Length: 273
Image (spheres, rainbow, N blue to C red):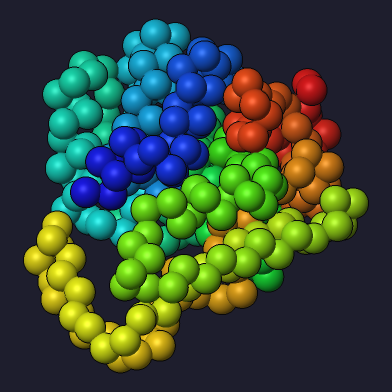
């Protein structure tokens, strides 16, 4: 259901922005690693965008191993079997666990690693944990490995408010949106804080989940844990984050509006950028 929503939503544009970049530059990404290589997708879900990278790598390598990492074991196993049917030469070895568990599991294998962390998923990690997470990933990688991130660069307050709240029913909930904009030359990205507050006591039916949920008057739903959700970087902050994490920029690509970026990071000292 989540895949259907993010691919077809008129207000949530990140999937479409990232997909368009990968459509154009999947071959460029595949060329960033030598073969034999292993493809690792952190937070893979259905691997809908990752198929573009898979196809590019199969053209160059003929066969390789793909490790989708996610917490939904049965789902990624089902998706993995479908990928193997769709792509002869592809071996899928799903790993059920958290991001860093998947990194540690994958780097222990022989071969060059191409790690993907798409969907601006880093933006959902607490701002207090982002640097630590990237530094740990850097510590696990060898010089020939590459780490590809999808990053949201959209810091337009008005557009973000519409994107996040465009489909809310104003008769049932108050939509609380705050965009915390940090200095462009600082290390902390800007980020969104979101919640809903119930207008009165009510029962809400979630049709696709088959759930009825009761709300008290004024009861709130937070869209995240910790201080932030959906971090937004500018290019200066993004490059500084890479540097502080021990990475160098090997390549980066943006969409036409420069509101989304896919960046390929190399262990510092081996970048060609």
